[in-house]
Image (cartoon, helix red, strand yellow):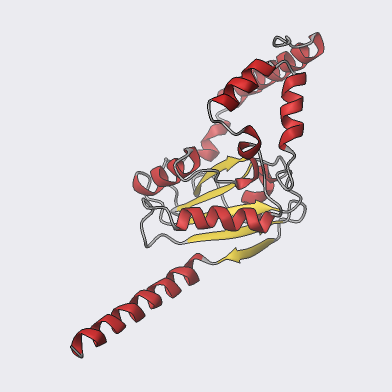
Amino acid sequence: MTNQPLTNTSQESSATNLTSILAYNEQFVNRHEYEQYLTDKFPDKKMVIFTCMDTRLVELLPKAMNLRNGDVKIIKNAGAIISQPFGSVVRSVLVAIYELEANEVVVVGHYECGMTGLNSERIVEKAKQRGVDDLVLDTLTNSGIKLHHWLRGFDNVQEGVLNSVRILRNHPLLPSDIPVHGMIIDPTTGKLDLVADGYEYLEQKAKGIQSNQGSDDQTCSTR
């Protein structure tokens, strides 16, 4: 099976979108509408937000969190999932921290997320229908790439958010004083539910370290 070309309808739709974007952009620039968005590369609120690419959050999330252009760094992918500690998401977070002066991270998942119970087998089957050859899939599998694992989502959104928070908090390259929070947003109302408080976590962590140090000091003094 070979890759199938786009249908005429798909080509026309894509061409219409591209033409529309470029036509609007020309007017946007000529009218100097960009001036209201002028800022620099450093986030004013010194914060990184990692969230889902869901279309409902494009404008809703910034509005619900009182964010304006220039306030934060926003990283997106499907489901706000960190699939590996040394992937592009964590790299972006670290760049924001070390190069762009961010000092706080917020992972924001959302209810009714499409990554909940994602069926990886269905995705692979759709890939075949769109022209991805079985030989390609076999080659990937034989190369050690577990597609069904790579394409999986999570059982519930809270689990997904907490797992991403956990990976970041335990990352060896993340500064120990960076708070990592976890939230879930309602994609209809914008209501935020806090599921992981980074400040509280760092406070408890500090108390644990102090407690351990106290025990060590006491042990030393009795020797």
